Structures are given as C-alpha cells and as structure tokens.
Image (cartoon, one colour):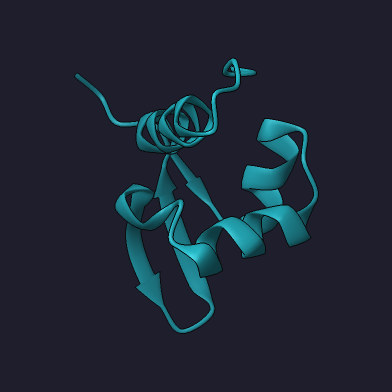
Length: 68
C-alpha cells in the first residue's frame, strides 16, 4: 500500500478545509501526533491516512460524527 503524504500545515489545512490555525491547535494539543512522519525544523510531513484516523478518533471521543 502506498502512503499518501502532505507537506506543511497550510497544505494539510487546504486538504481538510480548515484553517492553518486549526492545524496548529490540533498539533499542539497532540491530536495529530501519530500522523506526523517527519518534523525537522520548519518542515513537517503528515501521513494523510493517519490524519483521517486521528480526526475520526477525535470526533468519536467527543460524541460527534466524523466529517470525513
């Protein structure tokens, strides 16, 4: 299975239809911690499948339907 990656908070925000600040908040609070493949300096690479997994888990914990 080929891994789909997204480089940068801005690109991830555009893909998910949220703001860059939302991505920063999720990262800071640990929501996206398992989705981060590389974080080196100002470069960050996310595994898109893991991001969806994290967000699905986050919404399920809050009792909400996943928007994905």
